[in-house]
Image (cartoon, rainbow, N blue to C red; front, side, top):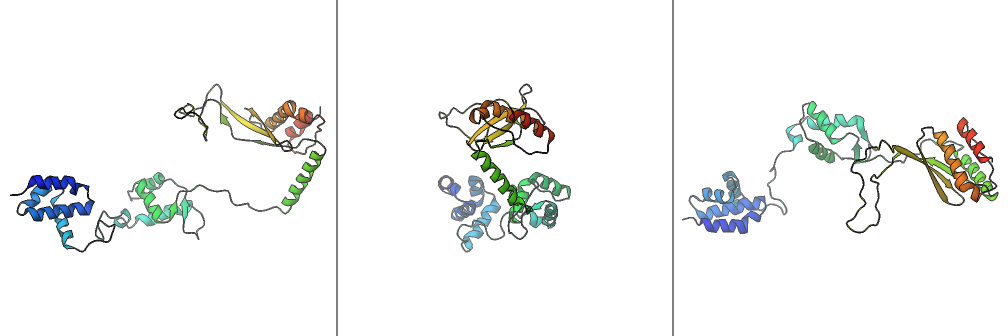
Length: 290
């Protein structure tokens, strides 16, 4: 008579916690111990298929597998590329016009998304998921990467002389007590209680609450920040505006800096600049000469 309660207790205590191969070997050993009718009983108690338990019996008679292996060589589901020989050649053709990086290096990257590549391959008769595309690309030595600013491009023969000239002018202005400012504008930003990158120190569990969606506020709109950096004093000034005329915005920003900060620090400032743009050339002259 088969001891079903004993098999169930041993399975719950030990067998159910083993890996895939050890489970079927445990079940096969119980079948051998139970004798006649044991296969049906063990299959019912463990929930394993009879074919799985039969494979376990084969495993009992085989040599041990290498450490860390639970399947014999060739076990498991075949790779998609193995079942579809035309998949990888089609994937490589899709990658050719969008491949980036140095072809001599072992790791390259691709600019198309996994979903787009999967959709294109499926349309070509190679059904595949985005996750499988990612796995196959990894095996081919591809990875998803951002581009990086690294190439200087062609260098003008007078480039160094230009900077030397600017540096000499800056030093002369500073020696004469005249302001030297650097101006620059940045991309437009939303106005309102929106999420920003970075973090701030606050009491634990009480982060600053901001809007969930970055939809533009129709009343507040967007503004572009324009920075004025006083090189000598090492201080900055930011002006925000909505104009799309960069030159007009620059002139107004310099005028604002001059009225609020410049005249207090440099009461004897004089206008001296060179620019081909008409508005920028006219504006600062009017502003700086007072």
